[in-house]
Each structure stands twice: as structure tokens, then as C-alpha cells.
Image (cartoon, rainbow, N blue to C red; front, side):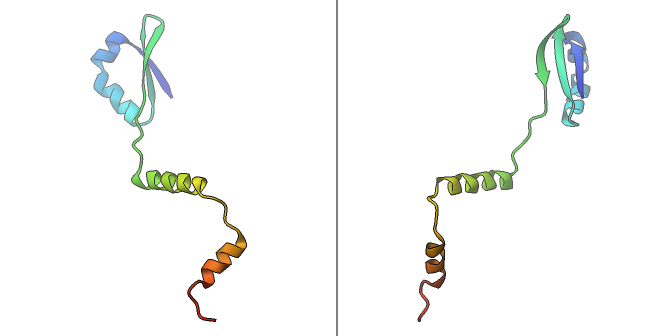
Length: 80
């Protein structure tokens, strides 16, 4: 949900507006009828999400592997 407030109201009620933003709402601040700013929540990256993104990027850079290569690695070091 988006709330629109005028600059003076935003100054007076900033703490309450920030609480609403933390709860997931967006706040547009306007001067007269012209919107001039938007308050929205900053989402902190979860360390696990960052790690997953890093692994996906590394996999995207890697060259494709054939089935034969995988089978060779599986048996690598085994005695026949």
C-alpha cells in the first residue's frame, strides 16, 4: 500500500511513517500536488542469498561438462 503525505506532515510524523515503511508500506512525499520523494524499505541481503548468487555466477562462468567426464571423475583414483 502507498501513502501520500505533504512535506510538513512528513516532518511532523517521520517516526510513524518510518514504522509504516518498516512494515512494508511505501510513502510518497509531495510538495503541493507534486510528488518529490518516496520512502521505501531497504532490504538487507541475507548472507545465504549472497552466497547462492555467488555460486550461481561461478556456475554460469564454468564450461559445460560431458557425461563421460563426470563418469571419469567418479572412478578417478579407483583401482580396476
